[in-house]
Length: 256
Image (cartoon, rainbow, N blue to C red; front, side):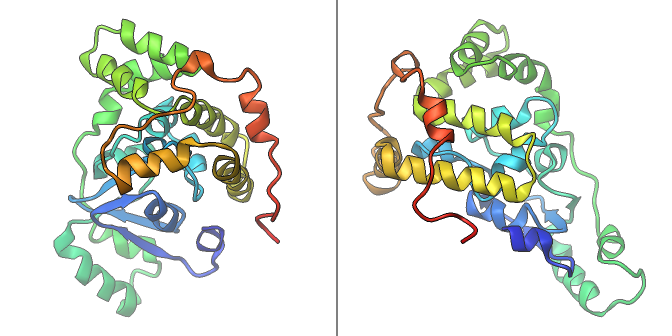
């Protein structure tokens, strides 16, 4: 992921169709990020009791307002318009133009840069649903804790906000708490620092926490969609949980 972002030759990524989790790591850090009318992007790690990785925490941290916290905690799916608005993509190119675009990138000398060539195929997106929902999202997800986020959502007169409160109550309290902190800390990091933070947290989840294995079992193995989180409620979390997670030292460092 760092190599993609730092590569001296501009990398063009087509996030065409489902682009989630690791797909965000491959596409989200490219120099030129293209979505299509059938793109669906997300960082759904909290659905398996985990936390966003592959540099996703940094992309989330840079989203407008509190969209980063919303997308990280809920794992909500973005359309092309949403991805453009949230900063996960740069251009909308209709699927039918992807082939001609690839040919133009390979063969055209005029215009003189990949970005200028992409603009020849660029389309105008619809209005982003995320942009329209910024009011209740920013209000609720600015709360200092997950519990207060849920309370603000439950008290909202917007049906989508109350539905989101229900979604959060189904997810791992540990995952939600660590993810909220991770996105907020990532606002002060660069990509390599964010990747390092994510790697530490990934090791902490894998080595010390039962929720990741349980989430994978419930969502991907048995597919009963009925995870048994430990602990099962926010008020049962250890008071030092955040300090423990962010101070964890992996046995093998990320950068060798």
